[in-house]
Image 1: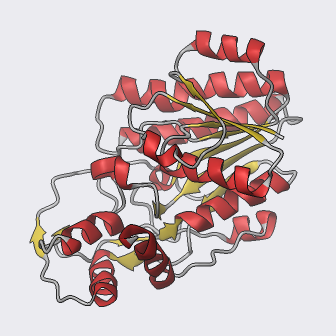
Image 2: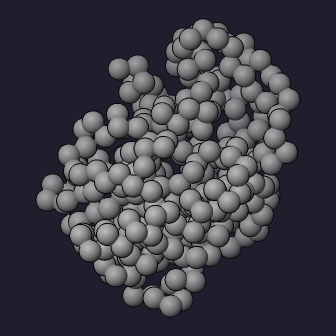
Length: 306
């Protein structure tokens, strides 16, 4: 099996690339990344080749079509910092470049499994369903919504190519530390507590998220690889938890008492409550998360503290 992972030096992409190598010893895995936010340290145990390039570059894709053949593309390259407000930059990276991916997949007859986002739902009432309201609050969420529309339009013309989109909720786990301020709140709160600093939360820490562990995200991608289906699916746990609960769980696991510093939220596009309806992913893909929030944090702490 010949596999291309775009954004493969990033958080989710690197975990997928390494899992493919682990599961399929005879596979040939290539990572494509421009290293603007990904980090080589995420690939230290990766055994495949790395292509350095920008997914917006049509000439790159033309060259790759001539030089390579792939059976599947895991497309994770994107601007993932939701606070970026440069609309043109966000749309070029996240939406327009996806057309290059799909055009290349059509040439290779390759399956495409790509990263969308729960950001497409904005502040619509939870639980969020794939066929529910789509009202992104920022340009990041809008760019992912347009990606989904590009995918659906492509499938109308080329249903012989399988395309699966995953609307990820709040993913956390090993490999995210290089994301900086875009890393999960779980990681950010952990770094504060472990440095004996006060975690800082928007008032009053009762905002809720559907936190999904990276190992469950990788599991969803492996299921998508196995299934002969197309579609867009929510990937979360189906349960939302507050930031205050994250502080409590981490404090308990680390054996410390923690005081929180609360401050006003500076963003007018902030999602206050996300929760995935994962019934479609369960029914079609056989996806079911294995890690509760407590179990995921406990497993994550083992890697952080090693």
